[in-house]
Amino acid sequence: METILAICIGLALSATVGFRIFTPLLITGIFERIDWITLTEGFSWIGSTPALVAFGAATLFEIAVNYIPAVGSVMKALATPLAAIAGILLTASFIGDMSPLLEWSIAIIGGGGVATMSHTAVTAVKSISETAVLSPAVAVAEDTTATLVPIAIFLIPMLAIVFVVLVPLLIFIYYNKRKRRAV
Image (cartoon, rainbow, N blue to C red; front, side, top):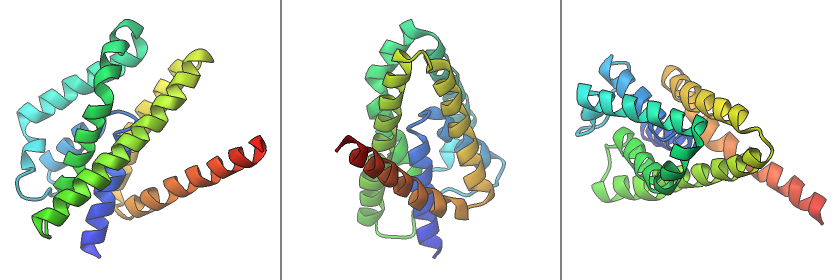
């Protein structure tokens, strides 16, 4: 059960990377630094001072990007690969008591895939919101989700299972309703 929970935590955090790439890494580093969580061997550097400074600066830059359109175009080009890498890193940092092949397969396919899918979905919403002049509201929702979901997951780890199961289910239901209306 502990391994399944660790995988769900990694995947749930990877999903939050779709909202803000560096915020979940920063929050994970802070929680690791204050010893509220323990990452697998080789990933404690996420809570180091240089990593926290880098994640903090990157988080501030990423938030500014959403409010300064000229800077945003540069970040858009880098965002998807960075989201995948962050998802892989977050998932791998929580699972470790298994064979390296299985651990990295789950991290790359699961964490990287979930991060890329959530980032793609958020990007689609952003493209619609920009045309509807709702961009600031969407940016605030992204900031809030990317901050509160990781904190909630660390405070109540079972929420990771709910997040990993519930969010895809809600997306599936919403997609099917939209599909039926279109027909």
